[in-house]
Image (tube, rainbow, N blue to C red; front, top):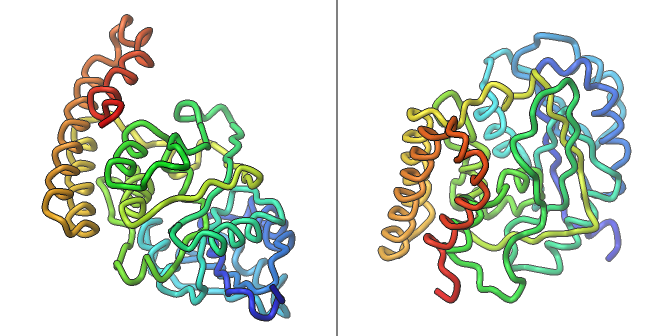
Amino acid sequence: MASHIRPLVSVMVPLFRSKRFVAGIIANVEAIDYPNIEIILSDRHGEDDAVDVLARHYKTDSRVRVLVAHDRLNWVDHYNLLMRTASGKYVMWMPHDDSYPGEYVSRLVLALERDPDAVLAYGRLETIVVDGCPVPGPVRSELPVDPDDVWSVRVALRLLFFWNIWITFRGLMRREIVMQSRLFIRPTLDLVEADVYWAFALALKGRFCFVPECSCTKRFHSTSASAPWQHGRLRYLLNAANVLRAYIGQMLSLRWEIWYATTMVCCWTLLRIAGSWTRNWEWMARRRGQLQRIAEELLFPRGS
């Protein structure tokens, strides 16, 4: 496929206190080997001069757009703004502290072009702990779904409950699907896990495509947006259930699907509450993996 007819891809880089990551951002952008691309750099706080440094660096690069404002958007509103601003057929957010190889975009575009039923393509996620910030559990990139399985509400729920669905947040998606569904990220209480629940909502719209030869690197550090999240508190779990119910009502049209998904979310929330209340029990810590497998079998029995 000739480069001049390749679909436009928008890579959106939200900045926030990004000065120490400028070199990495430049390395990510300059490594991209995909020819038809726009880079959107956006700073909504102005708490350092990272955007100025980047604007000077790319002042002659026609691929790069720079957005600057002082409306102090939170990260959810900032990401949604970038989605509205982008113009590509395919779009992806590129967090300022992650690392992406040059072929990352090209390989994901190829996967979506080959698979018109997929709404998002993503690759493996490697993790680095920068300053002792704990990684939230094991990260398994491969979809726990048989390639021959029919994508369904049941699959989306299973990914949410028992998989690291948040890793797909770094994938490449079809912007038309997002915009037609008005699928913007819903704010959660203190914005905890808003990316997780949005990824689930996108999974309700269609299939995810895993590209194993493609990978990126996420750094966990004490200033990461997710570092202060306390997932297990009751108020966060109840708020998450409400947000998920809103996504379900927005994304699904069949009454039985809405009923099924809502019921499963209620069951999952009760299990999470029980797990939160017993998380300090020694026997619970030893058997957590076994209990999760039992819960998965209860909610998604084999052969159903």
